[in-house]
Image 1 (tube, one colour):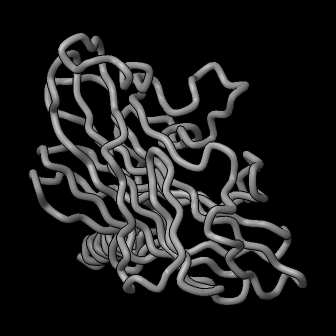
Image 2 (cartoon, one colour):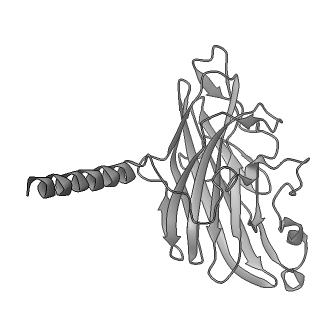
Length: 260
């Protein structure tokens, strides 16, 4: 009887520990069929990559929708979020708009229409707000909305060692992934509960980058849109400040489709 009781007790404790580990977020499983070391990092593609900058499918954006073939994601007239009012300095390119509020606060918003062939399937809008504190960059909120029902919505966060005009490289250990799950049409989704934080006091220049990826029912692969923050710089590797709002890394934003 004692052995049976002890055996049941050990099993219960083991199950409880496993549940606690999963709830703590320290053992988050990658989505099925995904290679976590390479997936959802399309922002790493450069002009020397075999994958076109701006994303596979973006070559369709100059074609009338009635004549488009395959999958595509195209810019949708980005406008500044102006979350903190009209006093911010702003900078927009074809994909995204950035705002700089002061040395330590900035944001980025981006949007795109996406579809397959001559079918417009939806419009996606994404946003990230950045706050600097010493050598920490904190993104909160990191948000997503889509006019269509989408599945396996993935947010990623990463910190790049990147000066203005430079692709840069990943800061080791900074990458993180958040699975927002399936999102109904028009619903707001955010990286909960506390967004994404990175810390690095070894590089002189940083840019925080986010990618938002999603699947559509009955279609293969995933669509994605990414945006890098305005660059930050430090004189002492202790306090980092945002550069001027238009000082961004190479390939600062883009979107497309990935069939892997």
